[in-house]
Image (cartoon, rainbow, N blue to C red; front, side):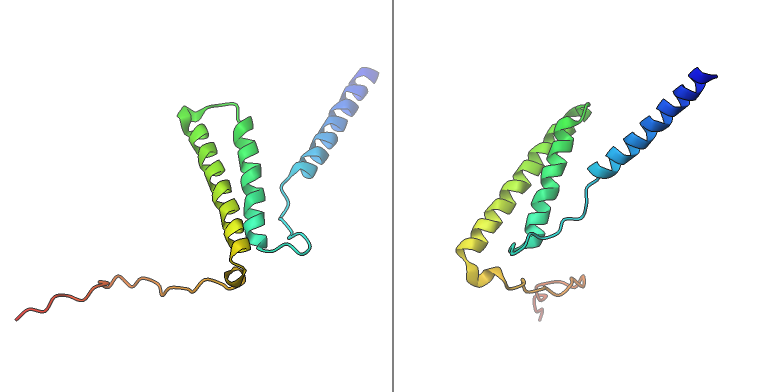
Length: 116
C-alpha cells in the first residue's frame, strides 16, 4: 500500500512540475521595449527567432521542407534587419504609416482601347 501511495505521489508531482515548466516556456505576447522604435518589426524579429529555434530542434526533416522553412525564416530576419537599417537612415520616413491602396475591384486597370 505504501509503495502505491509513493508511486501516485511521484506521478502527481511529475505532472505538476511538467505543467508548471510548460507554462513558463510558453511564448508570451511581445511587449515593446521602453523607447523601442518600430515595435511591430522587433516583435516580428523575436517571433522569427523563436520559429528558427523550433525548426532547428525539430526531429524530422519533412522531406527537406523543414530546411527550406528555416532558410526562409533566416531570409525574413535579414529583411527585417534591413528594414530597421533603412528606417535609421531615413528617419523622416520612419514614423509615417504607408499610404493605403484602394482594394482591387476586379475592374481592368488600363482603359480598353477605343474602337471605331
